[in-house]
Length: 108
Image 1 (cartoon, one colour):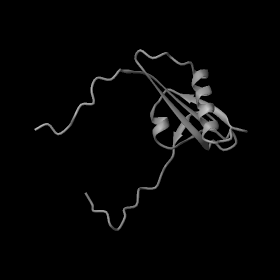
Image 2 (cartoon, rainbow, N blue to C red):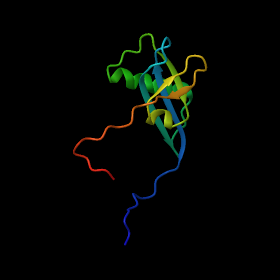
Image 3 (cartoon, rainbow, N blue to C red):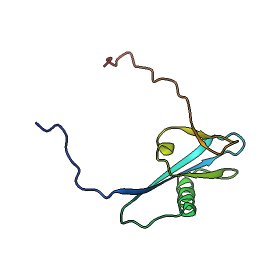
Image 4 (cartoon, one colour):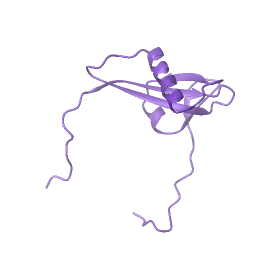
């Protein structure tokens, strides 16, 4: 018996842009915008990705005053919390506390 389903044929991912708007004094990321480019779609330059991220932040009511932008092609940078290392300019994953189980959740 088949226990999964196929959503159909989807185009291949050919590029990813993750743009982080961050505080240049602390490296704290205030806004992240991810763009996934599929086969057949128009390619985006890094500058176009940054501009799309700025528009998204403004639409969400996020002030970009005093923030800098950092672009990455690694999708993980948009999926888990990061900060920007000020010395290297690299994305650095944040150490997060282990999720606390609810007293109502059952162990697996």
